[in-house]
Image (tube, rainbow over all chains, first blue to last red; front, side, top):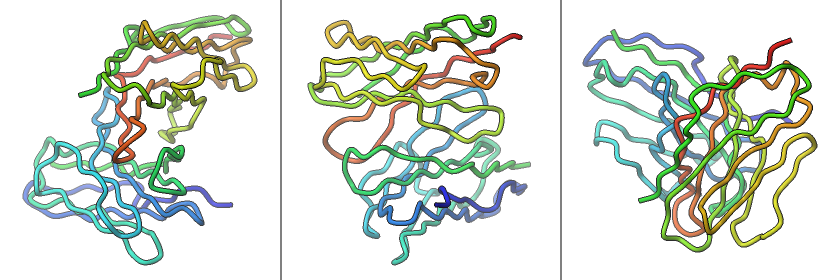
Length: 113
Length: 115
């Protein structure tokens, strides 16, 4: 079975622009979470969605938003990009909205110039 | 809030040796989960091992095992017979039993296996 997929692989934007990152979970998984990993640090939790509802939100500004579609795929949107938004954005999926293990995708590398 | 601390930024061992990575965490929760994830240069975060806090028995997965000390809030990872493919960043992570599926990660340990 295919794992978690993310697109695009790499992205370069300029300050003030908006970006949309996409994630497809493992088939059958209904929960998707997003993490931001700045170079040299561990990932930081941004959002969790389950059955199209937001179940958790990390300490990120309102410029960050997300949604989950009926097919359980998800998009992460970031508005008014700042240089500090440059990071690896990781998507993880799990079967249920519980303590199931999360499986990660390969990430999208966002560079803001 | 929960915190996870990995005190070894880098480690290096020879192939076939055994290496132990340290992790401590701080929480007031009584029921939670602990994980070790591996992130090779390819960037993909790969689950190595998972431990439920209510289980006293330490988890094992082939060459990987943990030493879970709940009272000390310590969760170390032992890699036996290390292989070149074990070279990666290793992250310790914590997740509460209740609430959002939020993993709290440590800063990571860069492990290099030398031939």
